[in-house]
Image 1: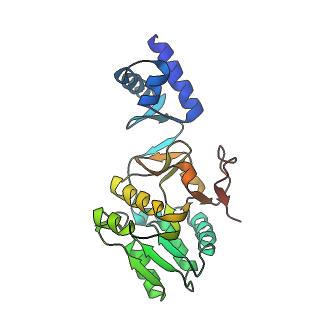
Image 2 (image 1 turned 180 degrees about the horizontal axis):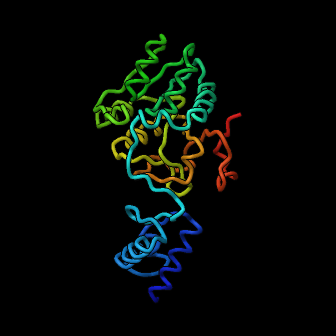
Length: 247
């Protein structure tokens, strides 16, 4: 197959799927992985797609390589986060054993949980302090503290989480994509999110409309594996049954 024909097929696949892996392209166009990688690199340099680890995403998707600090994120989309957080907090009942992920949107839930009789586990120091100050029962996961997001990560945290069985879990995310799923820039934080999600009966990802169509470095869950709570309809996602738009 000629080079231009391969380019055309790769771009057509991206148009349909929004993201591709080297291995799936290799199977479809019947060529070597090294050839696919060279093609993806060439198309990336031409601005036709965005090269990522193991494949590529469509150029109209935003790839986020850096993790904003809590101070930076807390000032963005305040009203949207508040609406999402208020609805998410209403889902918590007295009988629940809840995992509360680190993040600014999950942090906004604390304003609406002051009288909750549920029990909470979190990997966010600030969340734990606020819950304890409100007189709620809370367990803080131990491990390494990541300064930029104020989240506890590492093997100790993972081992602790594997012993818990949560009725509900509420998670933050940096990106939401049909193909790439829920993503975050840091591999260690992704492992904590993934581990906690696996221990939850019901999983809620809280993300305002700006998170849709964005892909960060590491996937911590597939798109269909959680219920998404957002504040408005997003083009290209209106047919998704796992999305709840808050009133």
